[in-house]
Image (tube, rainbow, N blue to C red; front, side, top):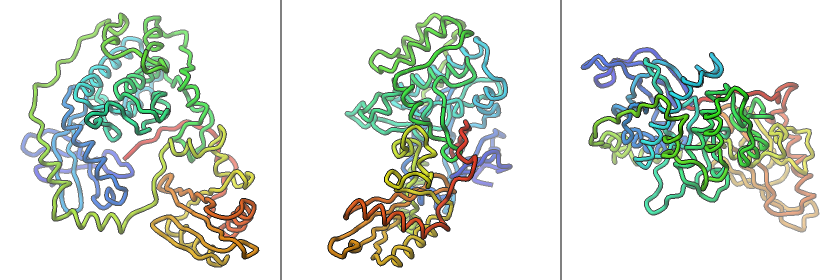
Length: 448
Protein backbone atom coordinates (compact mmCIF):
# COMPACT_ATOMS: atom_id res chain seq x y z
CA UNK A 1 0.00 0.00 0.00
CA UNK A 2 1.09 3.55 -0.77
CA UNK A 3 -1.38 5.86 0.92
CA UNK A 4 -4.82 4.86 -0.29
CA UNK A 5 -3.40 2.98 -3.31
CA UNK A 6 -2.90 -0.76 -3.49
CA UNK A 7 0.14 -1.35 -5.71
CA UNK A 8 0.25 -4.21 -8.19
CA UNK A 9 2.41 -5.36 -11.11
CA UNK A 10 5.06 -3.37 -12.95
CA UNK A 11 3.68 -2.22 -16.32
CA UNK A 12 6.63 -0.16 -17.52
CA UNK A 13 10.23 0.55 -16.69
CA UNK A 14 12.70 3.19 -17.80
CA UNK A 15 16.08 4.57 -16.85
CA UNK A 16 14.82 6.69 -13.97
CA UNK A 17 11.44 5.24 -12.98
CA UNK A 18 9.18 2.24 -12.79
CA UNK A 19 5.48 2.45 -13.59
CA UNK A 20 3.18 0.17 -11.62
CA UNK A 21 -0.49 -0.62 -11.86
CA UNK A 22 -2.34 0.50 -8.72
CA UNK A 23 -5.90 0.83 -7.48
CA UNK A 24 -7.52 3.52 -5.38
CA UNK A 25 -9.02 1.55 -2.48
CA UNK A 26 -11.54 4.33 -1.75
CA UNK A 27 -13.01 4.62 -5.26
CA UNK A 28 -11.86 1.42 -7.00
CA UNK A 29 -10.32 3.51 -9.79
CA UNK A 30 -7.31 2.03 -11.61
CA UNK A 31 -4.27 4.31 -11.85
CA UNK A 32 -0.69 4.21 -13.08
CA UNK A 33 1.87 4.90 -10.34
CA UNK A 34 5.21 6.27 -11.51
CA UNK A 35 7.83 5.48 -8.87
CA UNK A 36 11.04 7.50 -8.73
CA UNK A 37 13.99 6.99 -6.43
CA UNK A 38 14.97 10.22 -4.64
CA UNK A 39 18.69 9.38 -4.69
CA UNK A 40 18.66 8.77 -8.45
CA UNK A 41 16.91 12.00 -9.41
CA UNK A 42 19.23 14.01 -7.16
CA UNK A 43 22.30 12.27 -8.59
CA UNK A 44 21.22 13.10 -12.14
CA UNK A 45 20.15 16.66 -11.25
CA UNK A 46 16.57 16.01 -12.29
CA UNK A 47 14.70 17.59 -9.36
CA UNK A 48 13.88 20.85 -11.14
CA UNK A 49 12.83 19.03 -14.33
CA UNK A 50 10.48 16.71 -12.46
CA UNK A 51 9.01 19.56 -10.40
CA UNK A 52 8.31 21.46 -13.63
CA UNK A 53 6.82 18.42 -15.35
CA UNK A 54 4.47 17.67 -12.44
CA UNK A 55 3.41 21.30 -12.08
CA UNK A 56 2.64 21.52 -15.80
CA UNK A 57 0.62 18.29 -15.79
CA UNK A 58 -1.44 19.63 -12.90
CA UNK A 59 -2.02 22.85 -14.82
CA UNK A 60 -3.10 21.14 -18.06
CA UNK A 61 -6.42 19.33 -17.49
CA UNK A 62 -7.90 18.27 -20.82
CA UNK A 63 -9.64 15.16 -22.22
CA UNK A 64 -6.73 14.59 -24.62
CA UNK A 65 -3.97 14.97 -22.03
CA UNK A 66 -2.96 12.27 -19.54
CA UNK A 67 -4.28 13.36 -16.16
CA UNK A 68 -2.12 13.66 -13.07
CA UNK A 69 -4.11 12.93 -9.92
CA UNK A 70 -1.66 13.63 -7.12
CA UNK A 71 1.92 13.26 -5.88
CA UNK A 72 2.96 11.28 -2.80
CA UNK A 73 6.36 10.70 -1.22
CA UNK A 74 8.30 8.76 1.33
CA UNK A 75 11.86 9.37 2.50
CA UNK A 76 13.23 7.21 -0.33
CA UNK A 77 10.61 7.36 -3.12
CA UNK A 78 8.38 9.79 -5.00
CA UNK A 79 5.06 8.47 -6.33
CA UNK A 80 3.31 10.24 -9.22
CA UNK A 81 -0.30 9.06 -9.58
CA UNK A 82 -1.45 9.20 -13.20
CA UNK A 83 -4.51 8.30 -15.24
CA UNK A 84 -4.30 4.63 -16.28
CA UNK A 85 -4.24 4.40 -20.08
CA UNK A 86 -4.87 0.94 -21.54
CA UNK A 87 -4.50 1.35 -25.31
CA UNK A 88 -0.73 1.66 -25.57
CA UNK A 89 1.23 4.13 -27.69
CA UNK A 90 0.18 5.50 -31.06
CA UNK A 91 3.72 4.58 -32.15
CA UNK A 92 3.02 0.89 -31.53
CA UNK A 93 -0.18 1.04 -33.55
CA UNK A 94 1.70 2.50 -36.52
CA UNK A 95 4.44 -0.15 -36.20
CA UNK A 96 1.85 -2.95 -36.10
CA UNK A 97 -0.54 -1.71 -38.77
CA UNK A 98 1.57 0.59 -40.93
CA UNK A 99 -0.06 3.73 -42.31
CA UNK A 100 -3.54 4.52 -41.05
CA UNK A 101 -6.62 5.38 -43.09
CA UNK A 102 -7.39 8.97 -43.98
CA UNK A 103 -10.32 9.16 -41.56
CA UNK A 104 -8.44 7.60 -38.66
CA UNK A 105 -5.39 9.77 -39.28
CA UNK A 106 -7.57 12.88 -39.40
CA UNK A 107 -9.37 11.97 -36.16
CA UNK A 108 -6.10 11.49 -34.26
CA UNK A 109 -4.75 14.72 -35.74
CA UNK A 110 -7.88 16.63 -34.71
CA UNK A 111 -7.54 15.35 -31.15
CA UNK A 112 -3.84 16.19 -31.14
CA UNK A 113 -4.53 19.75 -32.25
CA UNK A 114 -7.26 20.14 -29.61
CA UNK A 115 -4.93 18.96 -26.84
CA UNK A 116 -1.92 20.97 -28.00
CA UNK A 117 -4.00 24.12 -28.45
CA UNK A 118 -5.27 23.80 -24.88
CA UNK A 119 -1.71 23.42 -23.59
CA UNK A 120 -0.75 26.57 -25.47
CA UNK A 121 -3.70 28.43 -23.96
CA UNK A 122 -2.14 27.70 -20.54
CA UNK A 123 1.28 28.89 -21.71
CA UNK A 124 2.63 25.33 -21.91
CA UNK A 125 4.75 24.23 -24.88
CA UNK A 126 5.37 20.49 -25.10
CA UNK A 127 8.55 20.46 -27.28
CA UNK A 128 8.66 16.67 -27.67
CA UNK A 129 5.52 15.74 -29.56
CA UNK A 130 5.89 12.37 -31.32
CA UNK A 131 3.86 9.13 -31.61
CA UNK A 132 5.78 7.58 -28.68
CA UNK A 133 4.36 10.32 -26.43
CA UNK A 134 0.78 9.94 -27.65
CA UNK A 135 -1.19 7.25 -25.79
CA UNK A 136 -4.56 5.72 -26.65
CA UNK A 137 -7.31 5.12 -24.11
CA UNK A 138 -9.82 2.25 -24.09
CA UNK A 139 -12.08 4.20 -26.48
CA UNK A 140 -9.26 4.88 -28.92
CA UNK A 141 -8.93 8.54 -27.99
CA UNK A 142 -5.58 10.29 -27.96
CA UNK A 143 -3.81 11.23 -24.71
CA UNK A 144 -0.75 13.51 -24.80
CA UNK A 145 1.88 12.38 -22.30
CA UNK A 146 5.48 13.00 -21.20
CA UNK A 147 5.87 16.70 -20.42
CA UNK A 148 9.50 16.24 -19.36
CA UNK A 149 10.81 18.71 -21.96
CA UNK A 150 7.87 21.10 -21.85
CA UNK A 151 8.34 24.76 -21.05
CA UNK A 152 6.65 27.76 -19.53
CA UNK A 153 8.48 30.81 -20.97
CA UNK A 154 9.89 33.24 -18.44
CA UNK A 155 7.79 36.32 -17.85
CA UNK A 156 8.66 39.07 -20.29
CA UNK A 157 10.42 36.70 -22.73
CA UNK A 158 8.26 34.98 -25.33
CA UNK A 159 11.18 33.12 -26.91
CA UNK A 160 12.49 29.72 -25.87
CA UNK A 161 16.17 28.97 -26.32
CA UNK A 162 16.82 25.38 -25.25
CA UNK A 163 17.62 23.02 -28.13
CA UNK A 164 15.68 19.90 -27.24
CA UNK A 165 13.19 17.34 -28.50
CA UNK A 166 13.53 14.37 -30.82
CA UNK A 167 15.55 15.31 -33.94
CA UNK A 168 13.17 13.90 -36.58
CA UNK A 169 10.22 15.81 -35.10
CA UNK A 170 11.92 19.05 -34.10
CA UNK A 171 11.29 22.32 -35.94
CA UNK A 172 14.20 23.84 -37.89
CA UNK A 173 14.21 27.06 -35.87
CA UNK A 174 14.86 25.07 -32.69
CA UNK A 175 18.23 24.12 -34.21
CA UNK A 176 19.17 27.73 -35.00
CA UNK A 177 20.15 28.72 -31.42
CA UNK A 178 18.50 32.12 -31.98
CA UNK A 179 15.36 31.60 -29.94
CA UNK A 180 12.00 30.27 -31.09
CA UNK A 181 8.28 30.41 -30.30
CA UNK A 182 7.14 27.23 -28.56
CA UNK A 183 3.66 27.21 -30.11
CA UNK A 184 4.94 27.46 -33.67
CA UNK A 185 7.57 24.77 -33.03
CA UNK A 186 4.90 22.42 -31.63
CA UNK A 187 2.81 22.94 -34.79
CA UNK A 188 5.73 21.69 -36.88
CA UNK A 189 5.91 18.51 -34.76
CA UNK A 190 2.17 18.00 -35.24
CA UNK A 191 2.71 18.21 -39.00
CA UNK A 192 5.41 15.52 -38.88
CA UNK A 193 3.05 13.31 -36.85
CA UNK A 194 0.26 13.77 -39.43
CA UNK A 195 2.70 12.75 -42.17
CA UNK A 196 3.69 9.62 -40.20
CA UNK A 197 0.02 8.69 -39.63
CA UNK A 198 -0.73 8.85 -43.33
CA UNK A 199 2.55 7.43 -44.65
CA UNK A 200 3.68 4.99 -41.95
CA UNK A 201 7.18 6.47 -42.01
CA UNK A 202 8.96 9.77 -41.36
CA UNK A 203 9.29 12.61 -43.87
CA UNK A 204 12.84 13.31 -42.66
CA UNK A 205 14.32 9.91 -41.90
CA UNK A 206 17.66 8.77 -40.46
CA UNK A 207 20.12 7.86 -43.17
CA UNK A 208 23.33 6.98 -41.33
CA UNK A 209 22.52 6.01 -37.75
CA UNK A 210 24.84 3.91 -35.62
CA UNK A 211 23.60 1.40 -33.08
CA UNK A 212 25.26 3.36 -30.32
CA UNK A 213 23.68 6.63 -31.35
CA UNK A 214 20.23 5.37 -32.23
CA UNK A 215 18.63 8.42 -30.59
CA UNK A 216 20.65 10.97 -32.59
CA UNK A 217 19.99 11.63 -36.26
CA UNK A 218 22.71 12.42 -38.74
CA UNK A 219 23.58 15.87 -40.04
CA UNK A 220 22.00 15.21 -43.42
CA UNK A 221 18.64 14.71 -41.74
CA UNK A 222 19.03 18.08 -40.01
CA UNK A 223 19.86 19.67 -43.35
CA UNK A 224 16.69 18.21 -44.85
CA UNK A 225 14.62 19.45 -41.91
CA UNK A 226 16.08 22.95 -42.05
CA UNK A 227 15.22 23.16 -45.74
CA UNK A 228 11.92 21.24 -45.44
CA UNK A 229 13.01 18.85 -48.18
CA UNK A 230 10.42 16.10 -48.25
CA UNK A 231 7.88 14.62 -50.62
CA UNK A 232 4.38 13.26 -50.03
CA UNK A 233 3.48 9.76 -51.28
CA UNK A 234 1.02 9.49 -54.14
CA UNK A 235 -1.70 8.08 -51.89
CA UNK A 236 -1.90 11.20 -49.72
CA UNK A 237 -5.27 12.96 -50.07
CA UNK A 238 -4.92 16.29 -51.85
CA UNK A 239 -6.28 18.19 -48.84
CA UNK A 240 -3.90 16.51 -46.40
CA UNK A 241 -0.95 17.08 -48.74
CA UNK A 242 -1.74 20.80 -48.93
CA UNK A 243 -2.13 21.10 -45.14
CA UNK A 244 1.14 19.28 -44.43
CA UNK A 245 3.02 21.53 -46.83
CA UNK A 246 1.69 24.58 -44.98
CA UNK A 247 2.65 23.10 -41.61
CA UNK A 248 6.14 21.93 -42.62
CA UNK A 249 7.13 25.42 -43.70
CA UNK A 250 10.76 25.98 -42.61
CA UNK A 251 10.02 29.66 -42.05
CA UNK A 252 8.29 29.99 -38.65
CA UNK A 253 6.97 33.42 -39.63
CA UNK A 254 4.87 32.05 -42.50
CA UNK A 255 4.08 28.62 -41.03
CA UNK A 256 0.35 27.98 -40.54
CA UNK A 257 -1.01 28.58 -37.02
CA UNK A 258 -3.43 26.38 -35.09
CA UNK A 259 -6.40 28.69 -35.68
CA UNK A 260 -5.76 28.40 -39.43
CA UNK A 261 -5.45 24.60 -39.16
CA UNK A 262 -8.91 24.53 -37.54
CA UNK A 263 -10.32 26.40 -40.55
CA UNK A 264 -8.72 24.08 -43.11
CA UNK A 265 -11.30 22.19 -45.19
CA UNK A 266 -9.57 18.81 -44.90
CA UNK A 267 -9.16 19.22 -41.13
CA UNK A 268 -12.78 20.29 -40.55
CA UNK A 269 -14.32 17.18 -42.07
CA UNK A 270 -16.13 15.31 -39.25
CA UNK A 271 -14.51 17.56 -36.65
CA UNK A 272 -16.29 17.87 -33.31
CA UNK A 273 -14.31 20.07 -30.87
CA UNK A 274 -13.95 18.45 -27.47
CA UNK A 275 -15.29 20.27 -24.42
CA UNK A 276 -12.53 20.97 -21.87
CA UNK A 277 -13.09 19.97 -18.25
CA UNK A 278 -14.82 22.40 -15.95
CA UNK A 279 -12.43 24.83 -14.31
CA UNK A 280 -10.55 23.35 -11.41
CA UNK A 281 -8.49 25.22 -8.86
CA UNK A 282 -4.99 23.81 -9.34
CA UNK A 283 -3.33 23.07 -6.01
CA UNK A 284 0.44 22.54 -5.99
CA UNK A 285 0.77 21.99 -2.24
CA UNK A 286 1.60 18.29 -2.63
CA UNK A 287 4.42 19.13 -5.02
CA UNK A 288 5.89 21.68 -2.62
CA UNK A 289 5.58 19.15 0.20
CA UNK A 290 7.46 16.51 -1.81
CA UNK A 291 10.30 18.67 -3.10
CA UNK A 292 10.60 21.63 -0.76
CA UNK A 293 10.77 19.97 2.66
CA UNK A 294 13.30 22.18 4.49
CA UNK A 295 14.38 19.26 6.68
CA UNK A 296 15.44 17.27 3.63
CA UNK A 297 16.94 20.08 1.57
CA UNK A 298 20.40 20.07 3.16
CA UNK A 299 20.61 16.28 3.10
CA UNK A 300 19.53 16.19 -0.54
CA UNK A 301 22.12 18.76 -1.55
CA UNK A 302 24.86 16.77 0.17
CA UNK A 303 23.61 13.55 -1.40
CA UNK A 304 23.65 15.22 -4.80
CA UNK A 305 27.30 16.21 -4.34
CA UNK A 306 28.31 12.75 -3.20
CA UNK A 307 26.56 11.00 -6.11
CA UNK A 308 27.33 13.46 -8.88
CA UNK A 309 28.04 11.58 -12.09
CA UNK A 310 29.41 12.56 -15.50
CA UNK A 311 27.42 15.06 -17.53
CA UNK A 312 24.94 13.36 -19.88
CA UNK A 313 25.06 14.10 -23.61
CA UNK A 314 21.82 14.46 -25.52
CA UNK A 315 21.19 13.93 -29.21
CA UNK A 316 22.05 17.51 -30.11
CA UNK A 317 25.36 17.38 -28.24
CA UNK A 318 26.24 14.30 -30.27
CA UNK A 319 25.34 15.97 -33.54
CA UNK A 320 27.55 18.95 -32.69
CA UNK A 321 30.43 16.63 -31.75
CA UNK A 322 30.08 14.40 -34.80
CA UNK A 323 32.37 14.86 -37.80
CA UNK A 324 30.91 14.76 -41.27
CA UNK A 325 27.71 12.85 -41.88
CA UNK A 326 28.80 9.57 -40.30
CA UNK A 327 28.42 9.57 -36.53
CA UNK A 328 30.30 6.28 -36.25
CA UNK A 329 33.50 8.01 -37.36
CA UNK A 330 33.41 9.86 -34.09
CA UNK A 331 34.48 6.69 -32.27
CA UNK A 332 36.60 4.94 -34.86
CA UNK A 333 40.11 4.72 -33.46
CA UNK A 334 41.37 4.04 -36.95
CA UNK A 335 40.72 7.65 -37.90
CA UNK A 336 43.60 10.12 -38.15
CA UNK A 337 44.41 11.34 -34.64
CA UNK A 338 44.61 14.91 -35.98
CA UNK A 339 40.84 14.81 -36.27
CA UNK A 340 39.98 12.52 -33.35
CA UNK A 341 40.83 13.41 -29.78
CA UNK A 342 38.04 11.59 -28.00
CA UNK A 343 37.34 7.95 -27.32
CA UNK A 344 34.59 5.73 -25.97
CA UNK A 345 34.57 3.25 -23.09
CA UNK A 346 32.13 0.68 -21.78
CA UNK A 347 33.84 0.63 -18.38
CA UNK A 348 32.25 2.44 -15.39
CA UNK A 349 33.10 6.15 -15.30
CA UNK A 350 35.06 5.82 -12.05
CA UNK A 351 37.18 3.04 -13.55
CA UNK A 352 37.87 5.18 -16.63
CA UNK A 353 38.86 8.13 -14.44
CA UNK A 354 41.19 6.14 -12.19
CA UNK A 355 42.79 4.36 -15.17
CA UNK A 356 43.51 7.68 -16.89
CA UNK A 357 44.99 9.06 -13.68
CA UNK A 358 47.38 6.10 -13.31
CA UNK A 359 48.51 6.33 -16.95
CA UNK A 360 48.96 10.13 -16.79
CA UNK A 361 51.07 9.90 -13.63
CA UNK A 362 53.16 7.11 -15.15
CA UNK A 363 53.88 9.49 -18.06
CA UNK A 364 55.19 12.07 -15.60
CA UNK A 365 52.16 14.38 -15.37
CA UNK A 366 50.62 15.89 -12.28
CA UNK A 367 46.85 15.31 -12.15
CA UNK A 368 44.08 17.51 -10.77
CA UNK A 369 40.62 15.91 -10.57
CA UNK A 370 37.27 17.55 -9.95
CA UNK A 371 34.13 15.50 -10.44
CA UNK A 372 34.71 13.81 -13.81
CA UNK A 373 37.19 16.33 -15.20
CA UNK A 374 40.94 15.81 -15.02
CA UNK A 375 43.67 18.31 -15.83
CA UNK A 376 47.20 17.11 -16.61
CA UNK A 377 50.16 19.42 -15.99
CA UNK A 378 53.77 18.94 -17.06
CA UNK A 379 56.65 20.20 -19.14
CA UNK A 380 57.13 19.87 -22.86
CA UNK A 381 59.39 17.15 -24.24
CA UNK A 382 62.36 19.56 -24.37
CA UNK A 383 61.59 20.70 -20.80
CA UNK A 384 61.40 24.35 -21.86
CA UNK A 385 57.64 25.05 -21.99
CA UNK A 386 54.47 24.33 -20.04
CA UNK A 387 52.25 21.51 -21.35
CA UNK A 388 48.66 20.94 -20.18
CA UNK A 389 45.71 18.78 -21.22
CA UNK A 390 42.08 18.68 -20.05
CA UNK A 391 40.06 15.44 -20.09
CA UNK A 392 36.34 15.17 -19.35
CA UNK A 393 34.09 12.12 -19.13
CA UNK A 394 30.56 12.35 -20.54
CA UNK A 395 27.74 9.81 -20.18
CA UNK A 396 26.27 8.85 -23.55
CA UNK A 397 24.11 5.97 -22.32
CA UNK A 398 24.19 4.11 -18.98
CA UNK A 399 26.64 1.68 -20.64
CA UNK A 400 28.82 4.04 -22.69
CA UNK A 401 31.04 6.94 -21.69
CA UNK A 402 32.89 9.34 -23.94
CA UNK A 403 36.21 10.91 -22.96
CA UNK A 404 36.92 14.25 -24.61
CA UNK A 405 40.61 15.25 -24.66
CA UNK A 406 41.65 18.85 -25.31
CA UNK A 407 44.97 20.66 -25.42
CA UNK A 408 45.15 23.56 -22.96
CA UNK A 409 48.79 24.61 -23.37
CA UNK A 410 51.68 23.42 -25.55
CA UNK A 411 52.54 22.70 -29.17
CA UNK A 412 50.00 20.88 -31.35
CA UNK A 413 52.54 18.35 -32.64
CA UNK A 414 53.51 17.44 -29.10
CA UNK A 415 49.86 17.18 -28.10
CA UNK A 416 49.12 14.74 -30.94
CA UNK A 417 52.10 12.61 -29.91
CA UNK A 418 50.89 12.70 -26.29
CA UNK A 419 47.37 11.64 -27.31
CA UNK A 420 48.66 8.66 -29.30
CA UNK A 421 50.87 7.46 -26.44
CA UNK A 422 48.19 8.10 -23.83
CA UNK A 423 45.57 6.04 -25.72
CA UNK A 424 48.03 3.20 -26.40
CA UNK A 425 48.27 2.72 -22.62
CA UNK A 426 44.48 2.63 -22.22
CA UNK A 427 43.68 -0.29 -24.53
CA UNK A 428 41.93 -2.14 -21.71
CA UNK A 429 39.32 0.59 -21.28
CA UNK A 430 38.91 2.05 -24.80
CA UNK A 431 36.01 0.56 -26.73
CA UNK A 432 36.80 -0.46 -30.31
CA UNK A 433 33.85 -0.99 -32.70
CA UNK A 434 33.55 -4.55 -33.92
CA UNK A 435 32.54 -5.49 -37.43
CA UNK A 436 28.92 -4.55 -38.01
CA UNK A 437 28.62 -2.49 -34.85
CA UNK A 438 28.17 0.70 -36.84
CA UNK A 439 25.47 -0.69 -39.10
CA UNK A 440 22.77 1.91 -39.72
CA UNK A 441 19.36 1.20 -38.28
CA UNK A 442 16.26 2.92 -37.02
CA UNK A 443 15.05 2.13 -33.54
CA UNK A 444 12.70 3.49 -30.93
CA UNK A 445 14.13 5.03 -27.78
CA UNK A 446 12.15 5.40 -24.56
CA UNK A 447 12.83 7.76 -21.67
CA UNK A 448 12.31 6.76 -18.07
